[in-house]
Image 1: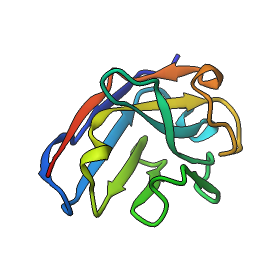
Image 2: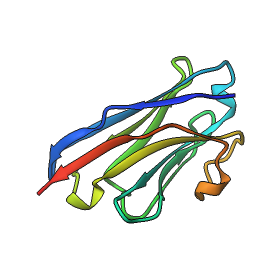
Image 3: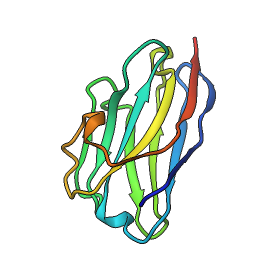
Length: 125
C-alpha cells in the first residue's frame, strides 16, 4: 500500500509559479513511477507529467511542455511538480498518482495503482 498526500496548491496570477509536492508513505516509493494528473471543473481527469522510478525518464503532456518540470527525491519519498508561466487554463485540482512500474510511459488514469486526494491550483487572469 502507498498513501499519497499532495500539497502546495493555491491561488496565483497568470505568469506566476507554484511548486506542488506529493509525499508518499512506505518503503517501496523508489519502485513506483510517479505521475501528476489534473481535473478542471466539468472536465475529465488528464495526464500532466510522469517520472520513472529512478528519475531518469520523464514524460509530459503537450500542454505543459517547457513550463512544468517533474522531479523526485527517493530519499524523501517525495515527487514534485514545478509549474512556471502558469495560465488560467491550468486551473484544476492536481492529483499525484503511483504505478508500480519502471517506465514513465503510462498516461491513462485507469493505469494508476494509487491516488492522492488532490490539491487545488487556481490561476487568475
